[in-house]
Length: 289
Image (cartoon, rainbow, N blue to C red; front, side, top):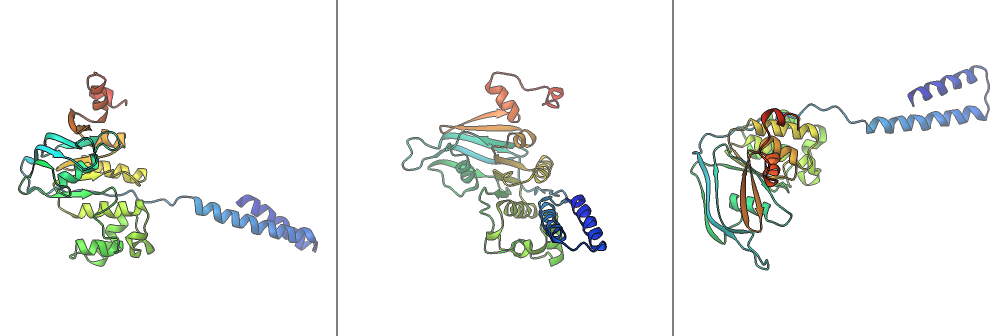
């Protein structure tokens, strides 16, 4: 388009120099205006280069080796013909990185809520170890106050931060200009996800609960989140449909089916192979997958 504009502009100048003021000059001027508008539109579509997300999750050292214990855990909802959780004994230890999988409606998000204490067990016990600090990333970003903007949300969490510190932190999460003063309720799902991740970063937790954390994230953001979680020294429980993400960050799978949790050791690929009766991949084979 730029070349066409240059060529047409050159032809127009030659016609003006030759004093050829006819209808063709007016037509060429209109053509140039149309092409300039087209060029402006094309430039607007080109994605701006962004700095890669920098995310580093810190785990507090308060928790013991035993982080969470659930015994005889049962959850029943009225109207359902089966319990979402049926007399299950579940254990989470320091360094466990668990991916919860199962079909739609099996209760994966409900299990996260039971672990967090948002939902109460119908019967059974849930014991959280002294010193265990939970950080919860909601699928609907429910930990955020949608009446605040991004700056106010971080100020509320970290009043010790200067305005410059907050802007710098938000800048690391691709926020600039009017975005930082726009109410969270008016931001896109991806923008709210990045604020929620930053909030998680600034908290001190040793047990992370994450519900579909890669939803609404671009590839760079997903890669950075994976790297941060791989280096995270606390425990992690995540619900995700992103098989690649699960392969990178978990070391065991909880399969929830008809109220029963079956534990598989390894990542998502190991889980699929185990379901087929195959052994885990050797390390040199994993690199080829």
